[in-house]
Amino acid sequence: MTLNGLTILCGVVGLGLALGCSSSDTKAPKGFMAVETGGAGGVGGDGVGDSPGFMPGSGSSGAGLGTGAGGLTEMNQCGGTAFQAEPVPVDMYIMFDQSSSMGYTIPNGTTTWWATAQQAVASFVHNSRAAGMGVGIQYFPFNGRTEQSTPSSCNTPDYVKPEVEIGLLPGNADAIANSINAHAPVSFTPTSPALDGALQHMKAWAPAHPGRASVVVLVTDGFPTECPPKEITDIAAIAQTAFQSDPPIRTFVVGFNLGPGGENLKELAKAGGTDHPFLIDSGDIGQQFVDAMLSISSTTLQCDFDIPAAPKGMSFDPDLVKVEYTPNATKVPEEVVKVQNLGACAFNQNQGWYYDIPPPAAPTKILVCPGTCTKFAAGTIDIRLGCAPIEGNTM
Image (cartoon, rainbow, N blue to C red; front, side, top):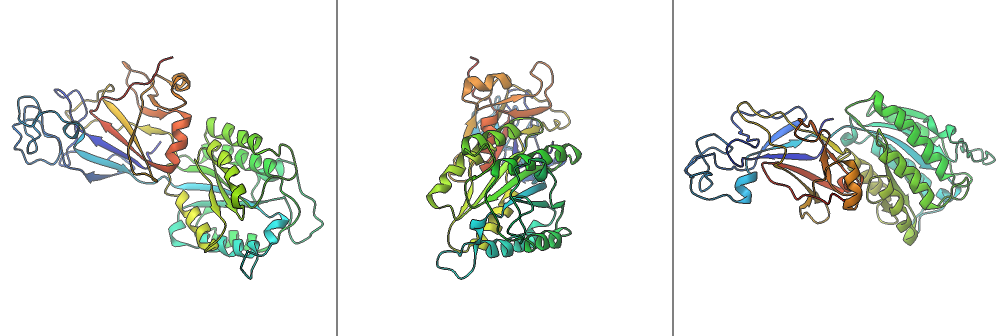
């Protein structure tokens, strides 16, 4: 799988045991773009070389290793050329709440939540920044158009098929906008079958569309009022199962007009692997919705990462790899502990990373525990080659 939101920092520790990178002789792996970060010195260097990356026999100023001056510092170990992954394109299935409360007038406004939502959806799908995203849409309660007598549906298969199938923007934009403009608020809120149906659709969609991130976006203005289960905890379990099984499908949550009650949607978003909901209560409601939807395309939406091939003349040491996560909120890097395998996640509060194939065999991917994967939806990830990791608990 192509890396998303990931930076590879290459350095050297010891005599060529770790992966070293040079901007002059290393091409960015597919799906990456090279970014200069300043460099570590070479093995045996004298600390006066001018190479921005690792070149055997030379070194950056003050950064020689081996017999060279400068010593072995954290910057020396992890300097070099950074490879930053390009975003993975997103395919989203929007499950939109059209319950009767969406027909209420916005506080201190002159229009309804539904009319505002219609305009916001049209603005989103026609936004130039959304080009290349795949978007489809369905509504709950099912078939609740302008016929106010239409009953709500508790039948999960009704929600598996989108009213407008997922298609690339801008080509699918008019179909999405015309679809929501043909709807009006009606009836109650059958959240559980609606979410379950959307997740089922994306479970089937993902394997047929490799190289794209498949997600569900639940847009709602209220809590479940019919169709069991109606407890947020139980509905969160549906999202969690979809996220923690293969292929993993994330659930994003956008909440309208929920006030303090919107805090309860945090449990649902976190269970679905997206850490937090987007809550919209006041201000420029339409623009906030557009911003929330566009932000999904720039989020880290995967939890396994390919290990790039070593440059010619270099070798990869699986014991010298460190993973760091930097939350968008704090911008403070946090090291992710290394664990032995998926089973060891349970001994580390569901946090950590591990190889798909444990050494001494040659690993090909870095995988992360489910709890860590949830965090990755709200920050960036660095993988530093040539740095010893913190080891997690084994039991």
